[in-house]
Length: 241
Ligand SMILES: *Cc1c(COP(=O)(O)O)cnc(C)c1O
Image (cartoon, rainbow, N blue to C red; front, side, top):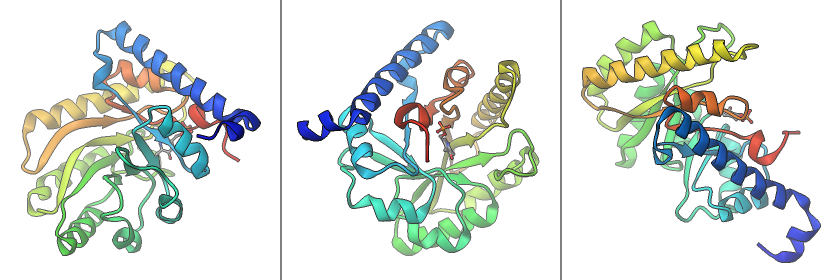
């Protein structure tokens, strides 16, 4: 990062301070519930953020970024310093965009139907790769949200063994907006229970190693309920325009 641009744009310093603060929050949230902070990954959600700020976050130690939209990610990718950095797709993926993103990201966190899993598998097979994925659950059962319902999950898990070019590494969720912390804790708790149950069942082709939950306003609660990957955006980069 050039000094002149840092001095002229206070946002660089803010990003650095924010990352430091979140790491401290992560350490104290883990200490409170007796977890090892190394079990929890910090993803920086970079939707709408310009590459120069993303690169600054990377210079400050961020090694995992999340983008929502295929087109936005692909248009920014060449400007990003992604050496040693993983990039995940976390936004809703349309079937007709699958061929554009498979092979371009390290993981697709937003698998929300069997059809989508099958299409990712098909394109991955054509490219000769295995694509890492998470299953996105609509834990609040909200009509307005994407993600699978818990009742659909079992069928998907049973059919994964026929999809040899896709690997399920865990679960992801965006819980409902809750007025009370106790409500959100309940959703996170239910996610963790499912995560543990599925892990115990040992399905073929499925390893439950990542539980992706917790955004800017609730990452400490998510950590207290077992999250292994938190996804703050605004808490790092500031409000989105
Ligand atoms: C936007 C987004 C985030 C980050 O949200 P913030 O409120 O900015 O922390 C995390 N996960 C997903 C899936 C998102 O779309």
